[in-house]
Amino acid sequence: MGTYRQTVVDLDAPAQEAVAWGERGRGWLEAEGFIRPVPWRGEVVHLAGPRWREVVDLVAWDWRARIKELEEEPGDEVRVVAGRAVFFAGAGDSTSPVCPHCRNTTSDWSSAAINTWYATGAADLDCPACGRRAPLPDWDWTGDYFAFAHLGFEFDDWPTLRPDFTAALGRALGHRIRVLRGKI
Ligand SMILES: [Zn+2]
Image 1 (cartoon, rainbow, N blue to C red):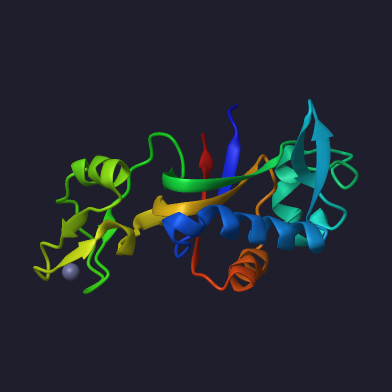
Image 2 (cartoon, helix red, strand yellow; image 1 turned 30 degrees about the vertical axis):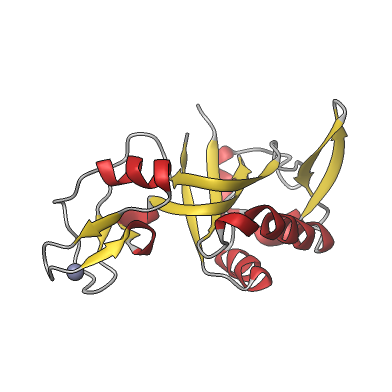
């Protein structure tokens, strides 16, 4: 089974301001009615709001064959992850970096750069195709597998989020986003 997690990663939120940008994004989601705050064990969690159906692809959810799917809301909370993080799409999938300069995909790279970035907040990758070097967060990844960033919005066990919704969240933040999807 596992959890189907979709993470909308903010690629531009600076480390020092990630918490504030996270609150801004959550505020927008709540104001739009896409999530709602719910008291839980002395804290507040955020579950699907009254307009959650507008942000998901319910047709793609039909495979679950839930008779009452239109009445049910997605089960798990929406979490804001603020702070340096290696976001990844799913366990065990393979991916390759795509050079931000020449757009070539390379299989010749060392995952040690990931550890370095997580430990220090800075790491570069060399492109064997064009010979140039670029910071790890600037690279794309096949299958949108990785994002090296400081802010992410995790939707657990939601139906597939619509691209126009994730784009609107990016516009609300004024930042570039990347959407990661996979079983964790
Ligand atoms: Zn290159």
